[in-house]
Length: 91
Figure 1 (cartoon, rainbow, N blue to C red):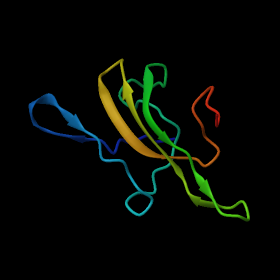
Figure 2 (cartoon, helix red, strand yellow; figure 1 turned 45 degrees about the horizontal axis):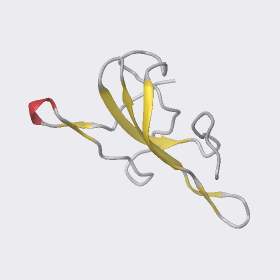
Figure 3 (spheres, one colour; figure 1 turned 90 degrees about the horizontal axis):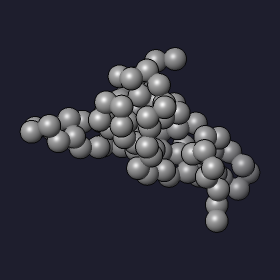
């Protein structure tokens, strides 16, 4: 599986996040650092769960933004509708 980042890098070493939307990108994957080749150092910043229609079909995929402490990279993209962060639940 190919992993790509939708993060935009700005001047002076500061990175800005522009989360992808389904209209902008078809990239959908679990959080993973392409630079480090692992999800071991991933820290989630935001998670927006998928939304569903009344019939149970997916109306919008979930989205995440995250930081990799291994290489200091940021990323944001859509995640599969069934994906949730480990230990996450509606409370």
